[in-house]
Length: 631
Ligand code: MYA
Image (cartoon, rainbow, N blue to C red; front, side, top):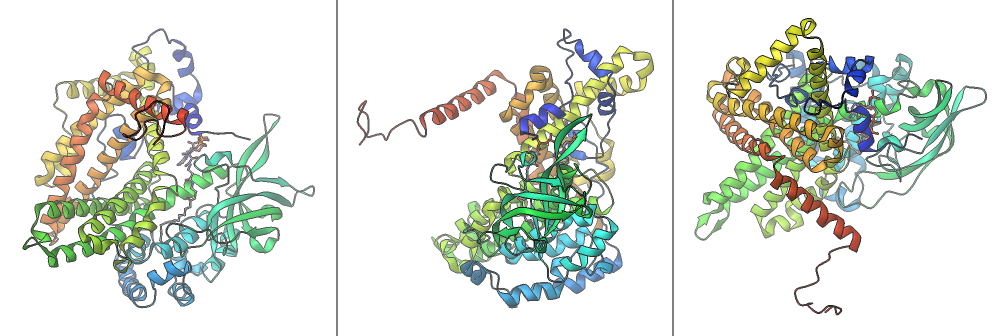
């Protein structure tokens, strides 16, 4: 069994850090000469987020804002959106779905008829053949109306059969894709009772049958969306693999049909939200899976799982953009009509500020969703950090926006009739599933640090043979000299960003330089031990989220200006406000390693440990001052 853990992930993957300040670590020179590390050191990235961990403001991925739909694709969307909206307004009943804990039959059959369960399946296999950006636009409609239905749709196509789309052989695609577009539900079966965030530690096991024609699968999965209704499942299990003369266990992905026999599922789970979506345990007992149903190669299952998740995360951002849009509309309508203290709520500056913050968060979420879908549609491969950030940002923002909408509606927002309390309940899980926001923040920080560490290591190697590496050394020296005298200027800013936004963009670029320096300091100070400094990692992830979200809106609003959109002035204001606040947060990173910050971090960890040791809150009520008595 792999027995992986997140720190293990980082330890295995974090390149040896740059230790110029500790020359006694000369073992590094030997290690640096090994082939894998040479590859690691030479690595470049197209990802904006990766590069900021090196303090580099590389904008190729971000600017110009992607405009990836051709006329035909625009036309298709124009034909699909109105019936989809009409369907959600006239046929689907979110309150009833929620109360019944079930999607109504006519909603379900209507969605199949609309083709909503096969949005991205190629037309030749029975789907609508939509691009990622077109898919995003339709999921925004779903998110505006019913998140529970969104999960039934998303669990089916964003993860349930996505593996077949991404990794399926022509035969697998031809066999399964027509079925998942014509009435058979799909599910993604990864999580197990003892394996949630630590996805690599699953226990389900599949072994080859004596005749070599089948894998025999045993195990169980929990909290599987569509688990009780799916006929076709992407299932992950450990398989024994021969490696260097030894047998090791590695995860393999399989396409499993309920009809294979031995597949059963539990009753629908009772949940806080997304109650109409089906969530169930799924059990596999001696299930015979034909070897042709291995998906993506034996032993490659972990990467299959991660890539399915990476590939679908932008959809969550798009969906939750729609959710936020509706909540903002409800709050704005209420603020414009409700009078208190002789004034409309809308005339109080605190309400205006609330609405402004809600609007900023929605705009940022939506900008990131379509930036990523456009990046993917353009065929670029490196977007996994941006996708993780979009998921974290969208789910945090939607929670905040809907909560604030309820606050603006006051007592009315708390009543079920406005629907907002249901949406808030539905939203809670989005910060937990598809990779918890906590794990994804660490994932972003550690992946970025690994990338920065590899660059520093490459530099260290270059200095050992300067004549052969003059180009690298000079360009790095130039970069450092520029940043040392505070003259950092990215020519990209003048080229790609609207003039009105250049001051905030320059400030942001300076903050990115600060981030790079802080990452370098963290590596010098902690070396590999940085993987255990989760409070620092969370701050670094926060900065990465601020920077990535900022460039997304800089790019989108610049496009709005250049296209002369009627909303351009509003978009510019939102962007300036967002980038200003994000940069201020990033600027505070410079004290990340200051003694008082570290003391504060250790204070927090001590409090946490004490709470664990005593099994809960230690202080008694203020009335309970006697040593042994509790009132
Ligand atoms: S489904 C369940 C979701 N579960 C998770 O997301 C699990 C979270 N855990 C993880 O992501 C991983 O376990 C972490 C690493 C990140 C913690 N991309 O062994 P390792 C590579 C690419 O060292 P670990 C659900 O909730 C890594 O570099 N590669 O990793 C359904 C290494 O490569 P190499 C990655 O410590 C909800 C290799 O893998 C990634 O075990 C329903 C092994 O790594 C990555 N991200 O763990 C939602 N991570 O060997 C419905 C690692 O080459 C949808 N690697 O060095 C809703 C949609 C919206 C609605 C739509 C409406 C229509």
